[in-house]
Image (cartoon, rainbow, N blue to C red; front, side):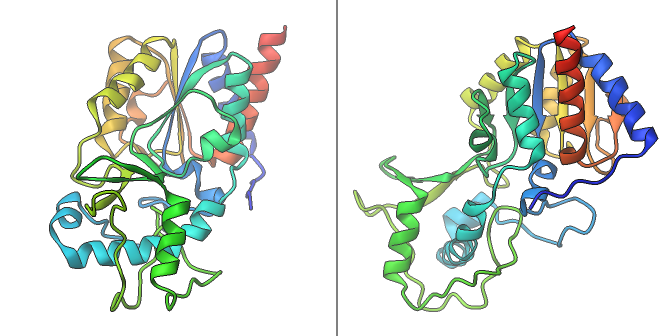
Length: 285
């Protein structure tokens, strides 16, 4: 369910200022977990976020126990995670792209909600939960098919309809005893979700694609990211080198607030549609 808060006059003034900064410029959009909280997917760092210790890539690759714990928790959360719907913030970004105002979106999220909202040029910096691949032979599997396999191999594993999701769509399992970890049906190798784990590098070609999107743009709009993760900071630095105006919409402070021409401390579902509406009105004049 989308939550929309009534804006106050100060926020409205900042929305007008942001639209003025962005108007007439081709916009690159950078999004983070704060964009998807109104879709029911929590973030790691926002106010009230649960304390989480994300699994590192080293733990996943080197420990059978860690992989078992990961797959149980990930499967328990998959149904709710995959059922999440795009919210007003996702829709506003897709509208700006369709209107020719935005060049595309670079996202740190792995939920696929930008694509479901209708965005066409989406660079998923940290990968996607929609796919799983074999670390040995490279075979790719659809996550929905894998979920069916997991349920067939572990019929005792019940999935609560009211699970409390973690930021990456996982659930803390009560027990992992007896769980049969899925493997590659082609070669029997280790399966890994097609996401960038903590401690893992973003594929170079994917970051180059994000840089290319930024190079073809004239402004950067950041939505729902605290910019703690280095991938976002690196893009901010590239925008600064080109002297591109930066607008940030995020609840709470970010690492790059001092570099923003406009910072709006408010929800993305509330602010992005207002910015998009003003930009489209200006473009129509």
